[in-house]
Length: 169
Image 1 (tube, rainbow, N blue to C red):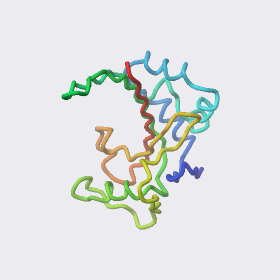
Image 2 (cartoon, rainbow, N blue to C red; image 1 turned 90 degrees about the vertical axis):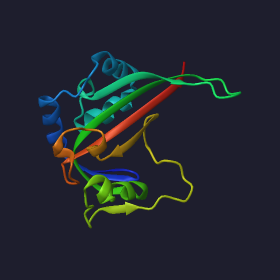
Image 3 (tube, rainbow, N blue to C red; image 1 turned 60 degrees about the vertical axis):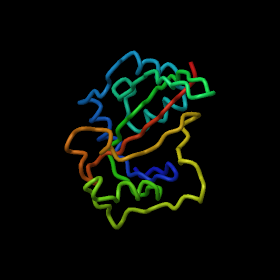
């Protein structure tokens, strides 16, 4: 199923994604996964279910990041939660900033396919995200986030979605 999560376009294999989560559990701390599920709106739950993603089996983490005092600026603490999920499928389109990153063969060892559409983002626009009923999501290639060798080629068959939430403590 081809889905448009502007500026990303992804060909998602929903049945393969369901099978992936039946066979794999990427979670590290079930309590964090439970927090995410409890915090979700029905639209967010429907979004993940429609793609075959099981929230209790995705990689979810939370941590506190300390910001040191700097001259006249007081430091503080930021609470950070992340939710990373895998979809079985392939990118059909990515934003231009990702094409520059992933196209660096010295960095990634990958060559982008000629058929991949590159979406030119407006000058000065902030990092694009896809809004999932109030949660901002970025879609990425899993090469920088997953240690397995199967992710070391462009056509690895997976796309990673990543949600980052931050708040002052």
